[in-house]
Image (cartoon, rainbow, N blue to C red; front, side):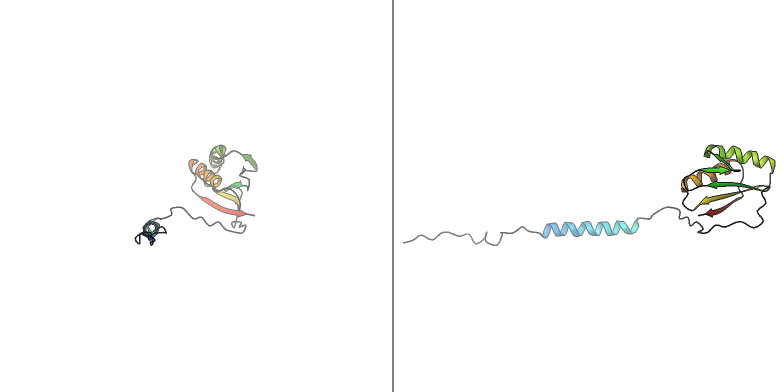
Length: 137
């Protein structure tokens, strides 16, 4: 007589990998990231620059200090190219001549925002807070 091979019925159903624990883990991660994404707030300042070139009315050259910021980051004060560190000295000098003078910052549309902020900071250090912005293309 022939001897039958002994087959283990308990191992026949376990040929594949059990994916249930991995799916539970992935679902828990998904829930965690969804919940944390709801509470994340983006902080920042949104600045909308005007799109066209605007000239303020009654632009009297004697009462306005004009500062131009070009698209490559160059700064021009009183038709002279200056460094950002020299803006304060120029503003103080021109303000001493005319104490009621305001500052007009003409920034190119593609001018670096950091440069514009540095110019504004230097103007504030020169004790002028009357600042008008204008854009150029």
